[in-house]
Amino acid sequence: MIKKKYFYGAAILLFLTSFIGMLIYGYKTFYIEKELAASKEYRYHFALIAEETDNEYWRLIEEGARKEAAKQNVYLEYVAPQRADNDELLKLFDRMIAAKVDGIIVQGIEGRRFVDLVHKATERRIPVVTVDTDVKSSERKAYVGTDNHHAGELAGKSILENTEGEQFVGIVTGRFDAINQQERIAGLKHILEGNPRIQIVGVKESGITEIGATQATYSLLKEYPQITALVGTSALDGIGMVEGLEEIAPNKDVYITAFDLIPETLDAIEEGKIHATIAQFPEEMGKESVTSLLQLQEKDLLENLIYTETGIIDKDNLPALREGQP
Image (cartoon, rainbow, N blue to C red):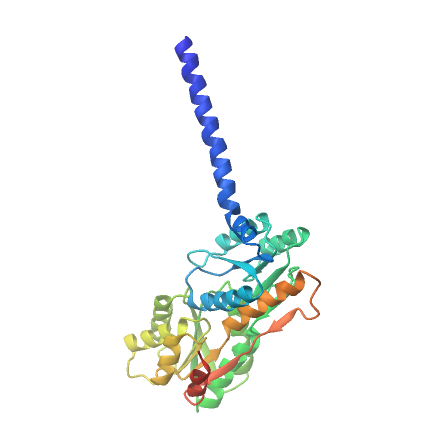
């Protein structure tokens, strides 16, 4: 009987010790970034929550944000889901609020949960700046990034000005549920749908991956062999569209408009495989986001829509762009 009591007592003690240890180490893991920021006497601790960890476009946003944060003695924490996942991103958003960072830069996500989390951060006096994608219905303090509707219009303008005769357009978009992608398609349609010589025939999703864009292009061309122009609305769509076209119709003449300034897209423009790309400047977005959060530590911003530069890059102005790059 005594042995049994001793056994149960030891088991309970072991459980309690493990449980308390888990709480302690979980707490330390949860707040390790906050403690690191405090230990080096940074002015502030900001969090940048990206769409996915190793996306080249988001790494450029991070680069711009880190450069500005370093200049201003701000600790910048970069977090993101391994793969684009709204649920995971929202969990990270909630964690950063719980960690009591001094400001949050985050991609906007459509839906009530995002709006509620922005409200939660606001209640705790943590300013939120949306980057790349806005959610105007939220209490975010500012949006920094591309005017996505205008960017879509530029893609449409590229097709209008560089093609002749009847055109059948296929669209490859990163994610159907992403607000920025929806706005770009809306801008594209706004320019093209009023023109009698141009018809948009189909839209496919790439999942913001190169292989996904290749598969989407293959599917579009198989379903609509009359396609004469392709438009991609996310960073990896351009290269994927080139590969998809080479797989299913390597000799077909298709006017391709991509999105963003990743090196592979610029190389493809130089080689004549992509005709134009819509230029965003993600490093500028990162820099301006940090600048905005710094201002918000003192007072509200006078302007809460901070649109960064957008333009059309083609073979004619690509050399000038490359000369200006570091």
